[in-house]
Length: 160
Image (cartoon, rainbow, N blue to C red; front, side, top):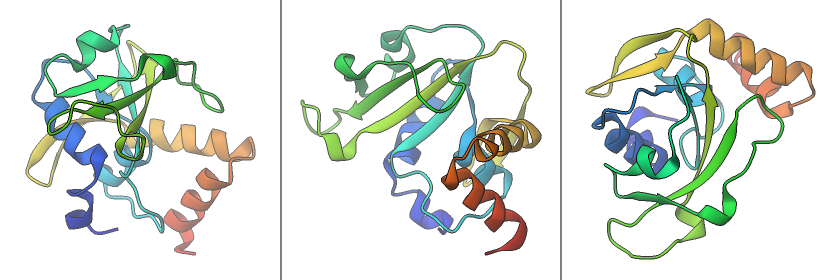
């Protein structure tokens, strides 16, 4: 995926808005690795984002300075990973209702001590979880049988 393609994804549009708030988040997961410079053989940023917060922030507070809302019926504990909760969020910038195809699955982990870096990427400065922390999580999920993460690691290391 090229960086120009990334700018047209729902996740990128949300990140730009979240980045303008005072929320103390940092980006994890595949999007974090992409910002660090990793390459993938699958599309990143279409509808999935992992963030880390230093403490619990209510979803309404998290999203208050963006034009995003969350689907309260979909707030849940994430499955298959070590994130604390998952939100399904959607933009209402040009519409007033939830459109499932345009929603983002936002996995949120609370960790007050996880390290992060400041990285300039595509004209923005982002707080991004450290490369080694993200890779460690991806390795852990791959060891537990998650094929998506295993394929990501193979591609990053072997380009196949």
